[in-house]
Amino acid sequence: MSVAADAQPRASLSLTDTLAMVVGHVIGIGIFKAPSIVAGNSSGEAMFFGLWIAGGVISLIGALCYAELGSAYPSAGGEYFFLRRAYGGSLAFLFAWARMTMIQTGVVAAIAFVFGDYASQLLNLGSHGPALCAATAVVAVTALNIVGTYQSKTAQNILTFALALAILAIVCAGLAMGGATVAAPPPDATHVAIPGLAMIFVLLTYGGWNEAAYLTAEMQNLRRDIVRALVFGICIITVLYLLLNLAYFNTLGLEGMRNTRVVAADLMKLTLGNYGAVALSLIVMLSALSALNATIFTGARTNYALGRDFVIFGFMGRWSDRARTPVNGLLVQGGISLLLVLLASFTPDGFETMVAYTAPAFWLFFLLTGVSLFVLRRQPGANAGAYRVPLYPLLPLLFCAMCGYMLYSSVNYAMSLDPGSIGAMVGIGVLLAGLPMMWIARATQPRAA
Image 1 (cartoon, rainbow, N blue to C red):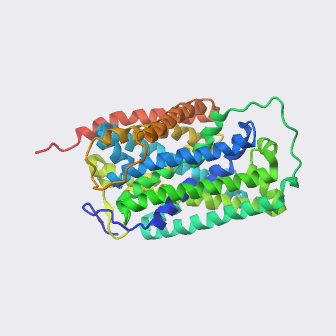
Image 2 (cartoon, rainbow, N blue to C red):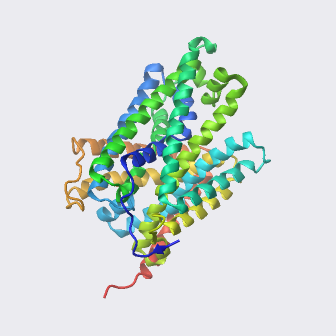
Image 3 (tube, rainbow, N blue to C red):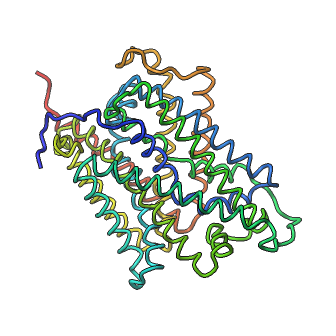
């Protein structure tokens, strides 16, 4: 495979490719788990559906902010490039370090664990079966991306389309059964609604649209497609989420949703009987593979940008001109993800541990990226005629406030969990380890002539 240090990303992604990446990133396993938690923290059906609509609106506001950043400063480094332009190399390095060792690789491991959990229900490989299936998924999808961008984006288009059809099939089944399918438990008079906690899980379920920032250097029509992909993508996702939640509600009722931890499984059992569990496992595995491919695709782009800027990581800053992908960046990402799968397999819940490991750092840098829009507005953009977010500065301020709230909430939630707190503390240690690494990286940089 030809890998040249001077090769550059090419504009090879169409609007359809980008849209599939956005939708595939967002529609993951969350929509099959979060609705019961959201229902449990809602006072009634109006609040329940209102929270999901609010999640779509908040995501759309953030997407408009990212559309401006991405169109003004197109780069395979995405948020890394925005942070470097706004705050300098030190903060950008810490972000790239966190994304390489925590954020993206932790998400890859978390998604892989969900795939492994459901795959092991269909193929029993013993007590270590979920971790083995998770590791196999990481290796297989990383290998697909190493083969080439064309192969990975084609797979993403197919997976996203199939996932959308599967969700619509669940919706049709749930709506066709009617509300009398299951007897709902009597209302709990002591039930207390906590909409703030519910919104944490709503926004986690909507998370991932920001990965479009890492595709800007490879988009064929940047200014037009970045806005369309984000806006159309979030609108599609919001509609699918509302329809799926309506199917849950129509079949189980709000009380029934509150009293289950596996809302999608209950719906499938009621609609398909004994075949429901198998059907649900296949759908969740499909969802996990879609999210895994999109996450691996964009994650390696930060490693590539880091390698271009720091000689100590220079081996990652090489772009394969034939495969049109950062091969070394993918290999590093895959290796760290496999290590996290191994470490998390020794905890009670690998998925929960990985969420706690990644969430605080993710929301910290998400907030800093939102603030960078105000800083970069004062600088001339790298791309003339870039998109401008409407209602500035109101919408960016709302986005930053949401990120700050989510940062606070994610830390509190992570530290409240016994297995999760272990992941959160390890994550803090890994982030702090980036400080001496930054000093070493700077010390090894060649001096300007």
